[in-house]
Image 1: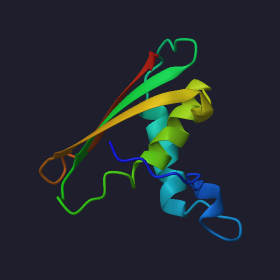
Image 2: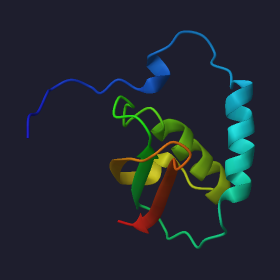
Image 3: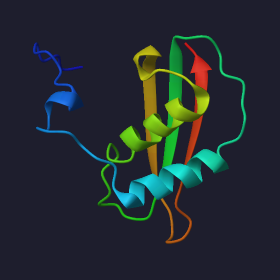
Length: 107
């Protein structure tokens, strides 16, 4: 493992000004919140596993993570500061077969 001794930059310090949800994201968030099942959430700290079914090998693995994590927080009343381990896997799927899968576990 390569270690770089610098404070990791927060996404909050990456952009200037207030960011606003796009209409596309607002609609997506509403749909996903309805689709998410009621589940029992363990006590923190959490380990979160996410699998992404994306249709392009050019898709960055990290781009979908923030919206997914934000929606999971909203639905399940968790705080991402309590996520101490995050495992992400990308799978290439055919068009119209895209998905994400997740599990929230006690660390």
